[in-house]
Length: 146
Image (cartoon, rainbow, N blue to C red; front, side, top):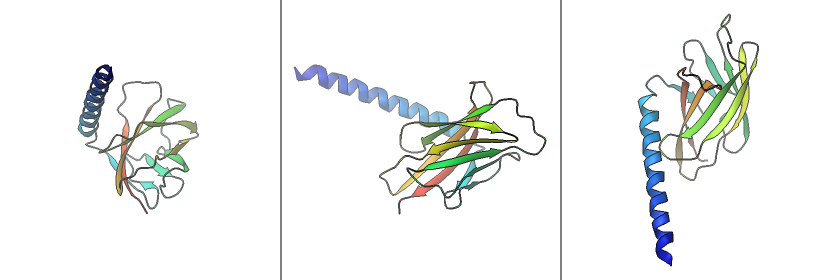
């Protein structure tokens, strides 16, 4: 009676490993032009004049406001963007947030999941919410447990 459960567990585990490998390969391949964020200040390096910032130093398990500011005079062809947060080296699930347009800025709220490791590297992708084929803006940051 135990054998069907063991087979299901092994198959499920194998699928999870394959998905994690494929995600990691895809993320690394497309992150050549990623910008770094400073977890202590919540500020990120700009990408082509586009600035991303957190409302405060980046902390886990608290709501943080994300603000993406476009250069002055830039067109805002969409009313909302999607922020997707994932672990760099460890699968931590997928955390998504919607950034809504406010003038030349997009604003939303995100919560960083708690990790049990001493240091966790994160990847934040900002993309067009409608799923168009525009490459996302990629940001990396590391957090160390207190």
